Image (cartoon, rainbow, N blue to C red; front, side):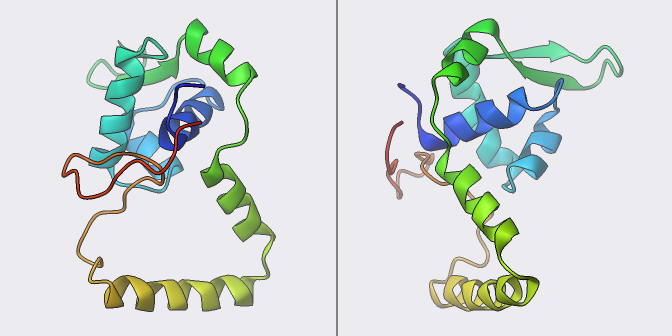
Length: 135
């Protein structure tokens, strides 16, 4: 499809609602605003997402998929992030809490607890992590 998994997830998230601000998109994708901003820039450059001044608040930029972005989604598979979120929602609450505690311990052991959350399957600016796979 020519998109990273993160780009696919962002595009699908944007298509599920009328228009989102960057902060709303970061919240929906459960990541940091600066991280999702990089993904959005790539989608805008590719003509798949449009940035427009909000009709409700002129200080706000509204993000939405273009016609080309929606067409790309028609043949897109589920994003890995969607599968992960759906699987977590189906787990019993006690299991999710246990998993959360274990993941916190892992993040601390890896000394990643000070870093902002990043998106799965997206190349990062530092170059320390490579894109995992393209869809």
